Length: 335
Image (cartoon, rainbow, N blue to C red; front, side, top):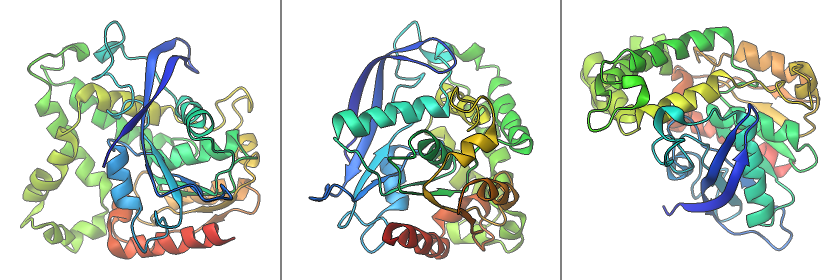
């Protein structure tokens, strides 16, 4: 799938500083209809390119069907296709890459939609994990533009327990002797990334998933082989600095942390007017439905609809769970 790039120019960032010559990678599927009211925005998740996200979230006969909708998939900063530590020239490369927030990503995406694609109305914003975090921010900052949202296995603010999970990932990478404060060259911190993959394996899927030995569906005979065959490649394809830049964004995700809301999460959630269905897996370890229930209680008319699954955070990769998710998306797209 072809990735395109929107040149943003020098871009001021929420936490200070500038991302020079910023580039926003994206892809589009389908076509804008005559009424210009069939736009779906589907931001990327941690480690994902736009083509990764499109392959999982869209398809013929799916809720997000390119034959019916104009689907825009923007890549968040740090994820490799947009400006990232691994692609930005000095002096903002590698360990010097500036800190980017969820709101910075949405501000750039808003420019893409309005300036490059000529979009004024969005029928639905939906995505998974870090993409869900961006989904909330879209609705809070642009309530008059966004008609419906479906955050999937994400949250409006990164919880303390979620940060415990992230801290393990960060320390795994930065404790590798080859890390060199982010200025490695021909010897990247592969051992650190593999250690992170092993940590992630215990959080990405649930305990019932492993109890039922569902890893065998991936062709693995045991847990060690599952980590080697699934989790290691999932992260080793990424640059370590890119992983850490994305985790900074994830750690600091807070819908209330914007001048419009003065640090008040409830005010930010209350600013959302879009029809909202929050879809978090009931076995998700770090984005649990208890957080979704609170968020839904603060968004007017919102619903928390837990996904009944043992796949944990990785539910959107399971075809049966995709059917549950697509049912909710079709409901939002129809109303």
